[in-house]
Image (cartoon, rainbow, N blue to C red):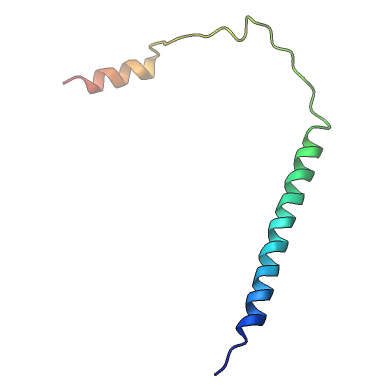
Length: 68
């Protein structure tokens, strides 16, 4: 009942190291290919104007239910 702990630890570490490397490569490849077909959309200052707090119908319904 002896285990070869040295061999199993080494192979497990190599597997995890390779898995991390593959994840990094996949992330870089995905981000690089995602930027190829994207077009830049120009936004005007009018569309970036903050709307502020608004009491919408679902907010008003919540306030009605929250009243004691």
